[in-house]
Structures are given as structure tokens and as C-alpha cells.
Length: 246
Image (cartoon, rainbow, N blue to C red; front, side):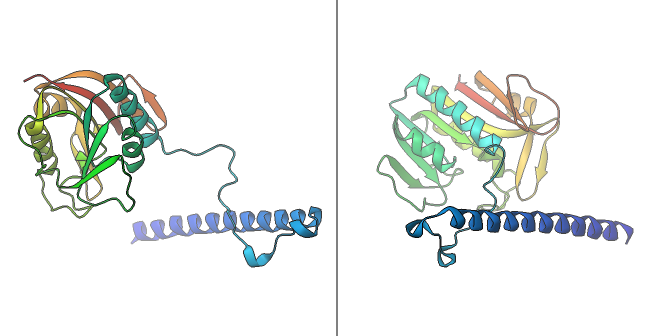
């Protein structure tokens, strides 16, 4: 009971703080509106009829989500250096895929179709556990922040406690020896399941058990807002450029 009361009080304080912040933002908006119209000529006057408040954009710096910012640019650069004639992506962020499609012949496999079409993206509706490729036929493949979700139902996939392991096996099935594989997953000291968001992997289990037949060409780590060559403790994201060896 005491725990529930404490949680309620914390939630109430958060609500009051955010409500006060919103009131300050709205007050600043109204002040800017009045100031603008006091300076405007007849043809420049802003009408309340066309109000379009962007209350949360007046920030001291441009706020960026660090994981996609770092991992997508890292993978894009690695793939650009390799210059593959054809590349397959499985479920990565649509912006990463869109830019990548401008530098290589790209096929994107995902269980959900994109809501917009782009001529340079060959979209294939498919399942990472049943990829539409023959054995050992793919030379270049990426899957960023995807495999940790498989089997948790978050994106409409079937519940499967071994979903991530099966996904790695299926990717391994279609990659040729010598193929380049670019991937990222959450990492921690021990394997964890954050149901139904994602899993986190112990790096030794990831590289020596699940990906034992790959060599690491490059690896980077994201911890909070830092992008580093050095692995640290706690929750992070590991970015790996791997080459299939056998």
C-alpha cells in the first residue's frame, strides 16, 4: 500500500511539473503572437484562425535520439566503404534504408510494408524467421535494432522465446561465406528479456555462441549519448560489422 501511495505521489508531482511547463510554453506563445502582430504591417498580420502552435520546438539545442543517429550513420559508412552491388536490409529504420537505397541496389524485407513507396527500394514483405532467399546467396546484409525484438509480439510477430536465436540462424542460412553482416542489438552483462520491448545480450554469448562462425571487422558501442570504441558496463547498444568465416 505504501509503495502504491509513493508511486501515485511521484506521478502527481510529474503531472504538476509538466502542466506548469505547458502553461509557461503557452504563455510564451501568446506573448510572441502579440509581439509579432504589433510589429507587422497590414499584409503581414497573423490571424488566430490559422494558429499552428509549435510549443515544444523552442529548445536550446537540437535534440537527437542517439541510438539511430549513431548506429545508422556508422552502418551507412561501413556499407559505403564496401560498395556492394546488391544489399539486403531486414527491418531497419526506414530513413536508413531510404538513404542506403541511393548508393546500392537495395531490397528491404519486413513483416510490415512501408506506408510510402520509393522507386529505389525493392520492398519484400517477409519474416526474418523465413527469409525469401536460397541458402548462401546473400553477400551483404544489415539488420539494425531488429533481432532483439523477435518473438516478443511487439510488432505483430508470433510469440517465441527463442525468436532471436532463430533469427540469427536464418540470417546465417542465407549469407555466403565471406559475406558482410551489419547489425546492432542491446547488450548488458547478462542476457535479459524486457518483455515486450526487446532483449539485451551478453556480448560473449552473442559473439561466441550465436555468431561463432563470424569474425568481427568493426565494433562500436552506444551508452546513453556516447558513441565509443570501448565496451562499458550497464545497458548499451553494440554495433557490429561481421564477416562470415564458415
